[in-house]
Image 1 (cartoon, helix red, strand yellow):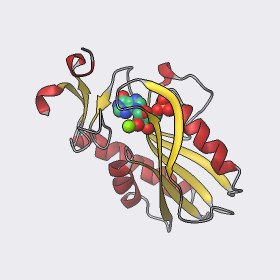
Image 2 (image 1 turned 180 degrees about the vertical axis):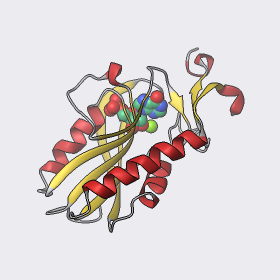
Image 3 (image 1 turned 135 degrees about the horizontal axis):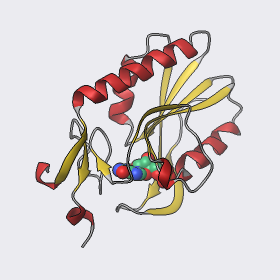
Image 4 (image 1 turned 90 degrees about the horizontal axis):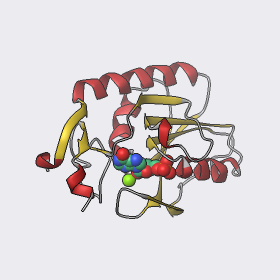
Amino acid sequence: MINDIEKVIINEDELSAIVKDLGKRISEDYKDKDLLLVSILKGSVIFMADLMRAISIPCNIDFMAVSSYGSGAKTTGVVKIIKDLDQSIEGKDLLIVEDILDSGKTLNYLREILLARNPASIRICTLFDKPDRREVDVYADYIGSKVPNEFIVGYGLDYDEYYRNLPYIGALKRSVYED
Ligand code: IMP
Ligand code: MG
């Protein structure tokens, strides 16, 4: 697994500092609100687990699973709900917790369908942003870090469902996904 990594992009200490800072900002901004964190499975699972512990105000959590990609590194443009939320979001202050904002298609679609369910508010928190790759107009309210246009894995992010358990963010060797 480690042999497939070209280089470490963000190490464990840097990740921890990024997530703590996001948690502080969110705790401040939502202190008088009814915060519901919605983690988008599976990529945001490690981020979510760390972020919720960096949030010091009362909040609820829920999970949603969508698929926007096939098994590879290229988008198919197809977004499908695989697991929906367990609860009504009416009147809640929703914060969507996503691993990475790439073309923006996934979050654009998610935001639309969740808006139709009448939450009090919706914001987006993404750990990573690849602004150069955007195809639709969608912005995150909280961004952990901008990343270059490279395929990255680890800390929940996968390539073909592997590498999610790497504790740092690494760039995958091109030879792994190009052949
Ligand atoms: P979008 O709809 O193109 O913005 O795709 C977002 C989703 O694509 C993320 O939730 C990830 O699952 C996946 N993705 C995009 N870029 C990467 C990457 O560099 N590494 C791993 N997954 C990625
Ligand atoms: Mg993925």
